[in-house]
Image (cartoon, rainbow, N blue to C red):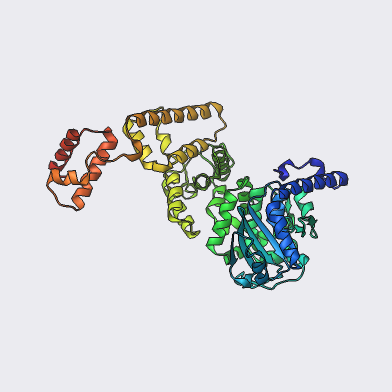
Length: 497
């Protein structure tokens, strides 16, 4: 994959036109190879449109990703054909067809050979700047369609000919922007962001996904117009935030949001951490510490991005600003910031319309992330270890990663000690798992056995007895039936509260 972080240094200088052209040619050659792997779709589809006298172009993120060597299974096209004609052309060829939002929006979606295809009629939209809804107007030229797009790197196209031949089209110099890793808008950024304020957040998302930087005029426009993001629904903001947090360079995208004031409007708890000094004084502030924790959590991932873990890493210390206390002698404390932070996580993620389970998982990790520090040098009893596992539940593997990521000290001896101590805790957990089922710690008597033994009917008393036995199970480990019955009877005779 190509990214600006690996662009040849001479390409970034204007005094090296030969190097720029060489780089351009190499990227186009690589893109041709990448697109060739989709020839089983591109060639017949281009032929179908040519046979009907229409043009077909691969466009937008599909071209950008092909040039970067990261093309997936989603293919976006634009055409001069009207949507009803597009639907007629692909009917019988595609595996499945559906219209996206109706013909009025000009997009027909289809599936073919494992690819998701969207074909949109040339557009020349204008926007209702109060609601950000486009007033869809079909266009007649490719250039008119490309100039309405968000960034120049997304305004490149490839014409797909009737025989599968491909022609690169770049009227807005998107390749130049891609070569130096810069996001710029086709038109004035103020006009683009007025049309669709979500594009400001998309800029941060593309920084996080591609490692690009934004053009100075784009950065200035975001800072100037950050309030406009309030016109966008929480659901659309959430979608972009997830793509940002799930990107390859999320901390760069978060930085852009914070530096331009965008985060103040949609995720204010994150920039608020910049004002708080970490109690270990090893980081400029809690904000920088949190970004380090996020990077270290990502380093432990295996496979696809884990959004629950990433969000927990980013937000694990948001409870510090409201709990900060200056202590005698110049120290700083943040007592119970994990409790406050978990409540803040729930409030923010609910406002962003995250699913309930996702919200609870992130909040639970934030609540538990400090628990390990009570382990000391291994003084926890087996009961405490059981409670740690039980309280984490299915989140335990993520909690392991979060706790390890939260070690950001530059003191190598202290860092090694923390790793060793957590290794010891994981070893104890494994040992207990060999002896008992820690994943399902339940009372040694079920509800029916409790009612029969105590001679009571279903009701609150059964629930209290069940909870007592579970606490006993956590404290003492598995009991025999006789031991559990004797303990329950003793508790019941003592008042059963």
